[in-house]
Amino acid sequence: MTSNTLDACEIRLGEKISVVLLLLNYAEPTWRSQHATKPKRVTSKVSYNRYVELKSQRTKKGTMKHTRYSSLFALIAGLILAVSVAAQGESFSNPDVEYTFEIPDAKWKMTVKPSTTTPNVEFVYVERNDGHFEVRKLNVPNKAIVSDIIRDEEQKLQFLPGYVAGKEEPFSGFMSGTAFNYEFVRSGRPMSGRFYFLKASENSIYVLRFTGYRDKLRSIRNQTDSIARTFTLKKRN
Image 1 (cartoon, helix red, strand yellow):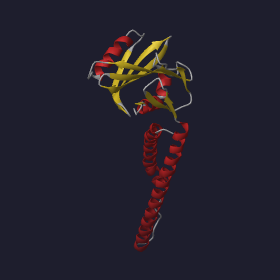
Image 2 (cartoon, one colour):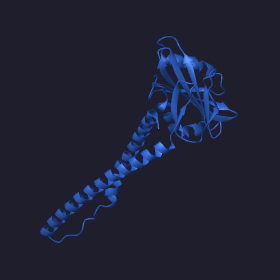
Image 3 (spheres, rainbow, N blue to C red):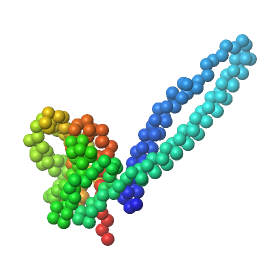
């Protein structure tokens, strides 16, 4: 497994562990409410004081036990996720291109293979309208601003039926840049696009273009983000 693959696994593992810990924090109040002891009826001040003392002890023991179980669960979940990510991840690399990235799901199939004359690559997720992915390299003026490059690309998109520009989002992984979203219509169906503009050098930008049915593309958003985060240039010897 390459170092890029290991780095990608660490990124996805960190994201998933954060979700697990968030769920644990959310579940804690529910656990306490389910295990809360209903107050019993007491007949004297001495009995009441003893009841309060015992209840306090039980609460402390229960909290400590719950904390140990929570920590153990988080550790086990993290290990399982790490093994799962490492097993499922697949690296894309080709001698005719200078970049590499991780493919998070075997449902992504390469439909256009790069060559010495055309360094473009394309993938399809199940069906083309479910998710289409292509990589393009743009040669830009020295020290070009990414937002200006997005405006140039957007001028081409405005001819799509029902085109509506979405928001731009700062994005970072192995390479930093901006994610641009938009919507359009194809054959009466709502479609969407999500482009990642990743700066490779002072005069070059890689554009990762994802398009598909709006609901389908939204459902695999975590995968498109993962591919963009792990996209990086090969190390030169």
